[in-house]
Image: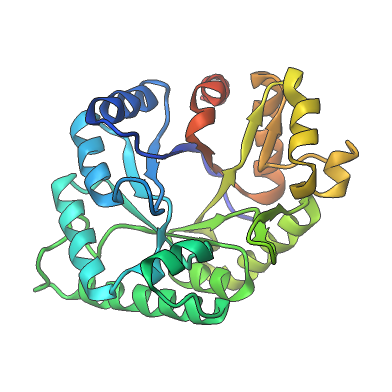
Length: 293
C-alpha cells in the first residue's frame, strides 16, 4: 500500500494583455497558497515560456509549469532548448507539462496536420524520448538547472497516452474528460475515473510510489450556483451527476469546508493529491486550500 501524499494545488492561467496584470496575478496566486502556477498553451494567448520567466521574476517560491504544451506544435530538439533555457532562467522551478493536443481549429490555423489521435501520441512519445536523451547528456547546452531536466507532467485520458505517462512522467495528469466528435468535451463519471486510475496504477508497477496523480478541475461552484451550473453544463456532465446521484472531482460544488472534505475522500478513493483549478476559480477555491493546510 502506497503512502498517502500531501496535497499540492495549482492554478492554470490564461495570460492577460498587460505585463502589470500578469505580475499582479502571479503574486496573488502565491499569496493565496497555490503551490504551482501553470500556463496554458493555446493560440491567441501569450507564449508559455516567456510568461513563466516573468512569473518567476514576480514570485518567490511557487513551482511553474506548462499546463500543458501541445507537443505537436513543437520540434523536439528546439523544444529542448527552450525548456532547458527556461529552467536555467527560473532557477530550476520548472515542471514541464506535455499533452498530445486536441483542438483541431488550432492545428488548422497553424497549418499543422491534425492527424489521428495515434499520430499525435506518437509525436508526443518521440518528443519525450528526445528530451530524455538530450537532458541525459552531460555536455548538452543550455544545461537545465535540474539534473536530467525538469520533471514531466503528461496529461491525457486514452490508454496509450496514459501508458506513456506511467512510463516517463513524475506526474500523471487526468483530464477527466474525453473529446466529443463535435470538438467539445464530455466529463467522465466517477466509475470512469476509477477505471482510468486503476489502469495507470497497473502500468506504473514499481513506480507507483514515485508518481503523483493530478486532476484538472473544470469548475468550482458555490452551493447557491449549483442549479445554474447543472443547467448550463448539462450536456457535458454524466447523467448520474445531473440527477444528483454522484459527484465529481472535476466539478466541485459546495462550501469550502464541504469541498475540502470531498477532496480528502477523492484522494482516498482515487489517489489524486495534486489539484489544478482554472484561473477564473482561483479566488473561490483559495479558502479550500486554507482548510486543507
